[in-house]
Image 1 (cartoon, rainbow, N blue to C red):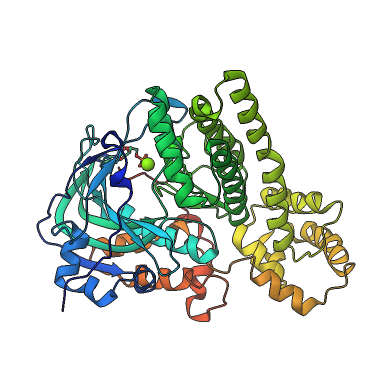
Image 2 (cartoon, rainbow, N blue to C red):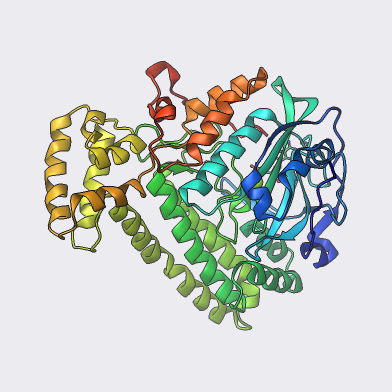
Amino acid sequence: MAAPRFAFDNSYVQLPERFYSLVKPTPVRAPALLKVNHGLARELGLDPAALESPEGVAVLAGNQVPSGAQPLAQVYAGHQFGGWVPQLGDGRAILLGEVIDVHRIRRDIQLKGSGPTPYSRRGDGRAWLGPVLREYLVSEAMHALGVPTTRALAAVSTGESVYREEEWPGAVLTRVATSHIRVGTFQYFAARDDRDGLRALSEHALGRHYPGASGPLSLLEHVVEAQAKLVAQWLSLGFIHGVMNTDNTSVGGETIDYGPCAFLDTYHPDTVFSSIDVQGRYAYAAQPQVMLWNLAQLANALLPILAEDRDEAIRLATAALDRYAPLYGEQWLMRFRAKLGLLEPREGDRELAEALLKLMAQNQADFTRTFRGLVDGSARAEFQDPAAFDRWAEGWRQRAASEGSDDASRAARMARSNPAFHPRNHRIEEAIQAAVSGNLQPFERLLAACTDPYTDQPDYADLQLAPKPHEVVEATFCGT
Ligand code: AMP
Ligand code: MG
């Protein structure tokens, strides 16, 4: 079996040297294959079998640098939980290079957990199996749910131990993204008053994410729009990112940096899972507002290149940011209207959706099961007070029937907006625990169910169940 051949076409490395550090992955003791994503491999023009060969696994573990790769760590800055950090950067990730995929889209291929870089600070540059499998599962589930996201191409184990309070098996994730440019990347150059750097980065980001658009104002407008859409989608699926720092906010509008992320089980707007988010800064319902704050940091970073005159730059930036709230509102309503099977926009639709959410919170209803249950009539069982649900459902049925769509086609549409499957926290934990003891079957099952999330799959019915009280996961961890 031949080594995998990547048709690298690297552009980030062409940017000025102060944008990155050239650094190679650090080899590991005993690489072993956990998973290769065949569909994504083919999309990238790669032979899945070659990736699974010993030569391929050596590449995925960082033991072999493939021909044409120009490995580097990107520098960035960012606000972490609102606090400014002037220099961050890829501390445990290395960009191997870029390929042009079958759709002619440029994609980064990055190893995560591949050893120290100049930006590792006190970290070891490594990852353990838990966060690697969690990111694999959640990012691939998000993609299948239709959410823009970074992808998982592969996971390998390293045969080495990683220490996070306890000793854990080490692993490396191969992550694919349309770029790894973050709001924090712009902040890094802005903080150094490096206007040439800002301009070069802006041009580069535009070319990759918003071809046809030009200039930093247009970039800002596009990022505002992409992020408004993205966060509305997160909320429509009960997703909580968990660490919405500006360095974890992609200018391409993909969900990035899966750490303590989690999906809601029972619905409550104030839900937080991340063990480090003690103030609830990144709670479920706080996410739209936090994203606006992050976009304001991007706008602020772009100010020096938006216009010669500072007042004019501020005026342009403010106008771009002002688009966020109405756009987000429209997107949220569009998503929830679809979840309720409504075709025509009508007065009162927002109130109808909000009334259901309020009832769900009062009744500790499971988010995903309730919405999927609207399709087949099983939703009322999720409510402690089913009669309260019945009263809401009466109004909903009248509203739905009044636009003249038939029940069967409405149910079919709703089944495409309300997933049956998503990676539930307790199932992710179960899959990780099994994998630590060498059993990948729960991981494979959960992945199979969640990569076809809108289809009823009786074989995986157990994965649709809400956690039993003793199974509920209260806290999730970054795993850094
Ligand atoms: P995160 O909160 O996961 O987005 O990480 C924040 C920053 O810490 C990034 O710059 C990471 O590269 C860095 N980092 C996280 N974990 C490690 C690690 N184990 N070793 C080195 N750097 C890390
Ligand atoms: Mg990060």
